[in-house]
Length: 68
Image (cartoon, rainbow, N blue to C red):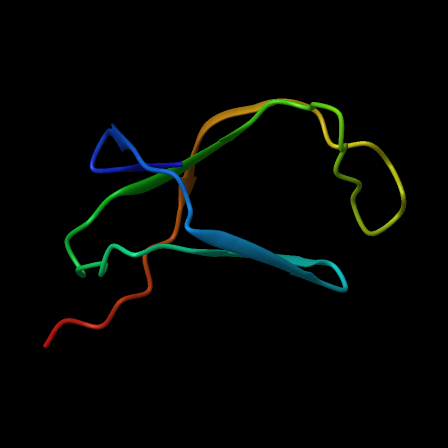
């Protein structure tokens, strides 16, 4: 995970069904750019059909923070 190009580690994560939620101590702003990378490790992610998820590098995530 990178916020504005700077690597950031989640403070925690949770799994619920087909969703992964990452929690951060950082308060996101509407102007932040967010990207996600994933390298398969010991615990491998699967998609909803049960297929293993391959490596992802700098995938652009949608920032849905509403400007004040």
